[in-house]
Image (cartoon, rainbow, N blue to C red):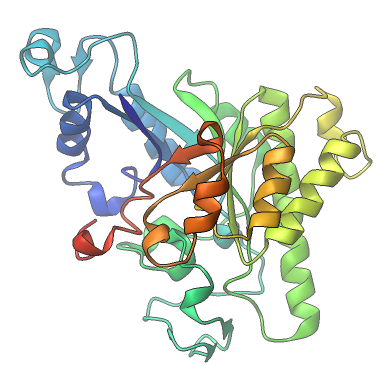
Length: 303
């Protein structure tokens, strides 16, 4: 059995055939976790996961007999799960507005008047804006109680994807720092939610590994700080995965020393991560597709 620990079949690009894809995956003993990036995609991830109950596949109108005939594993709710969270680029900071037109890929300024780094710094999924539908990246503010309510579903197995993303950033120094601070505040809120619910965290980190390490060190060292009042509810150890890892080996070691896993996907064909992967213990590696992004070169024109 294989588990795709990070997929986005809850995105609109799959709305016409996600059920067929899931059925094919289950038939081949591949399970999956669909990851939310805002409230709507988080809710959709749950709806999809809830659709796969024991013997009932409402999205495909298939029942137990049909599932058995097609050799789909039919157990109580296994195979399709959800993670819920607000991705850092989806946060309404009031500082960055992403337009529908295609961004520059050469670095420097684009028509959004933002600084855009060169793509080779790490091209993880949402960071490069290869979105099939802009509804997947609508900006919003984080509502703790709304997301907590979503987590009532037994199919929710993690908080994510959450984290820090400095790929798109304002061009002025003052706004850059405010932009980073707002992302860190959002991350802390969602870490509090993860601790209250005793759920692991799926971290998104792009051009921000050192800052993420500092945030996590602070949380582990001082979980009851005044800036994190909700964490007093349960002083539980944070756990989770650094999805689409693109940092260096020293950073990888620090994350693993804190108990986190590293997620690898098609990014390994674009960046030189061979040595890091070789050095990383197998029991610290999670595999993922991040679909519809980061396909291997031979499938680059596909989701």
